[in-house]
Amino acid sequence: MNTYKCFLEAVVIAATLLFCSCSTGRPVSASALALCSAYRNDPAAASQVYNNRIVQVEGVVCNLGNGANTCYVLLSGDAGDYSLDNQVICNLDRTEVSKLAAIKQYSSVRLTGKIKESRKYSAGETVVMVDCKFLD
Image 1: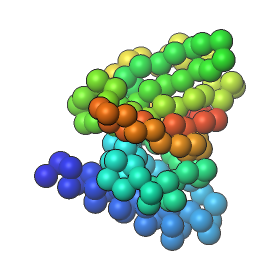
Image 2 (image 1 turned 180 degrees about the vertical axis):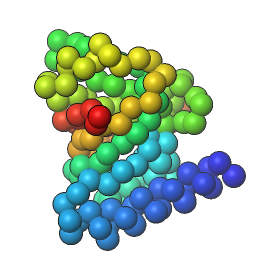
Image 3 (image 1 turned 45 degrees about the horizontal axis):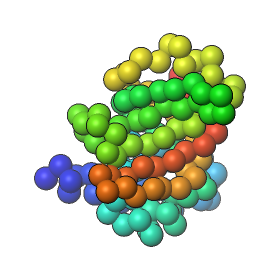
Image 4 (image 1 turned 30 degrees about the horizontal axis):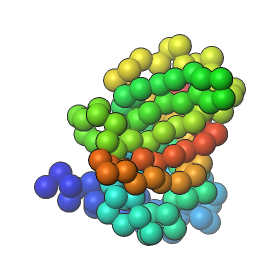
């Protein structure tokens, strides 16, 4: 039942993006769970809908990092599962680095960024976003 609900949520988000966002230029809101479900269930359709588009994503932080070349927040794409099997990698815009210290693991956050790609692994799906900024 949970998979079916996630699939329906992904379909609604995709329809909203196609019929509203393209004409208005506004980002579409999606949960990390819905994004991962969309790419897992139909990668070609999800790529066509989301890749290179601005999306507002909400999810639970399962990891974060501040490296020399990139700063990122990993959002769980599985409800209640933080094993990183299904995740959204939000590579942060450099202007957001100072905000990382206030972000706690397992907290809920909202970010906006551009969907770059999706990577399929044996254990799950990883959606990659770039130029992400925290929403207050």
